[in-house]
Length: 266
Ligand SMILES: [Zn+2]
Image 1 (tube, rainbow, N blue to C red):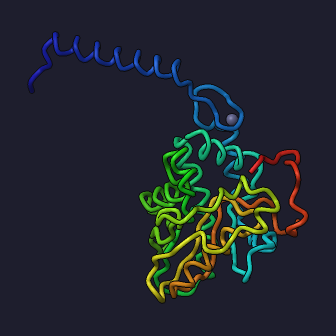
Image 2 (cartoon, helix red, strand yellow):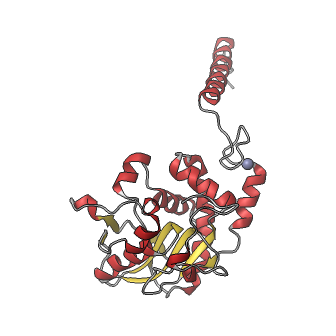
Image 3 (cartoon, rainbow, N blue to C red):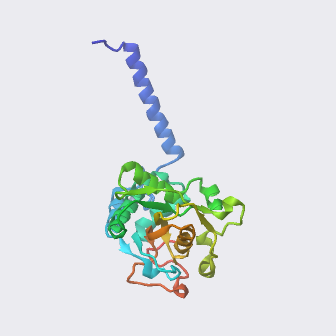
């Protein structure tokens, strides 16, 4: 058995120390903190992680809280857009906290597996709603697609499903893209024009639309319209978070003007 020369061991120890110092320096330059409570040293501290998991253990049917989802479409939400789930989602999307991908993907996978028994048997395409081109330039990644692809890598998608990017913003073809949903305001969400998305799913394909947050349902309605226009069948939708549980239905005129306690801005 060959032995490591003393000089090699010294080099190895030096390299380890150097890596440790680099890690410490990186921690100083870019301090890691809990995305929810800002506890230092971790992407999501144990208490917040447990609360997040608890908030997503019972996915629920959320379409009744989406007044613009017309025609109706079954929508399963992993949890309510509040507290730990909203905090993590905002940090993930707007602060580039991609270190939260595994925990959010786990929540989405729970919702997908909860909804899957209601879908018709056979192959189903999971189609993420794409980020608007302007938001994509700002945040350099497509949040829903990243979460779905993480689920696929970990093998936690429902059996018979595959992730396919069959939706595109028309901005990509030179037409004017619609403004980001969260900047539209209540009036804009009511009047978001149809036609902002185009679909490339094959005719006859069974599709489930996947999005991050369900507000009025206008985005899911537009996604379903685009897919159906190309001949695909839309059998449902799954979202990571819904602004209201089904026990508190919303109308288009009753969206809150400001977040309530425990809620986050959209
Ligand atoms: Zn925390």
